[in-house]
Image (cartoon, rainbow, N blue to C red; front, side):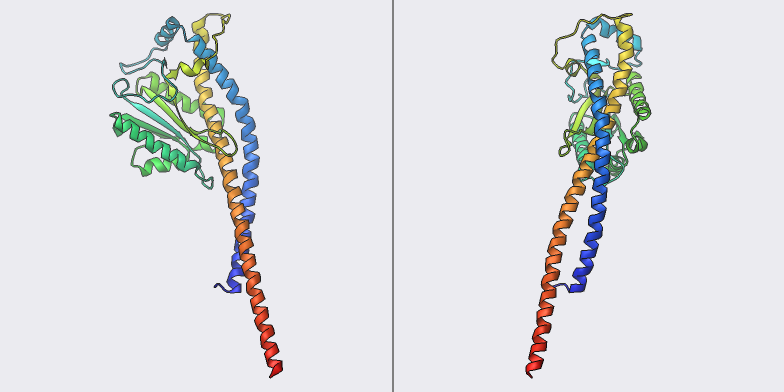
Length: 310
């Protein structure tokens, strides 16, 4: 059994740790509230624009005109919008090169937040390997230091790393990331771009989402709603050409906000669990200390009593 001095030292150490975890929980909670306000304002706007764009592009002639207007380069280029599901994986027969864009945090102490992203990355790579792809056919982009380290550890080269975008979410960073991805898609360098990130479903749930960025999927464009008969000015093609980059930029921006909100939620929960465990441990140590102290006092009283009898 540990001595009273050791238990007392342990109690002091646990108290210090409890102060740290409690403070970190308060900070994460404050950041979570701010991030929730940001994502709740941006996500409905992005989804509505996506719905409008998807509704307009149900017209085959308009889709063909847009494809011709964009001037896709190379034989490997793919249409910007296809009749595929939002999470459908590409096939080697149709798409020569694939890009994965992974979103994580730059720091730890957020539970399984980063490890879940890494696990999804590895499982996606395994699916691509089974579909006939090799490492040379897969470009990997990392947004966040933790997933960047995980990719490097897996011996797969990183195409590009945006750590600052994960540290401070802003629209300019989203435009930079989206522009790089869209340019590579239009130039025919890649034919399929997949996003992997944590979605803020609630304060206690942050599931990992894998969805297609390009080509855009028609099934997520209308959301099952009846198409709206819009009055379009000046003409449909001009409107679609304006909407398309807005939707693509906003998608990356909302993913950054979503992942950032999920990170703060995961850290809040992790620090809450750590604080609860520290409180439980502190109670156990205090009880052990009191029992040990009581035993010492009882022993001293017995010694004094036996000495007086002698």
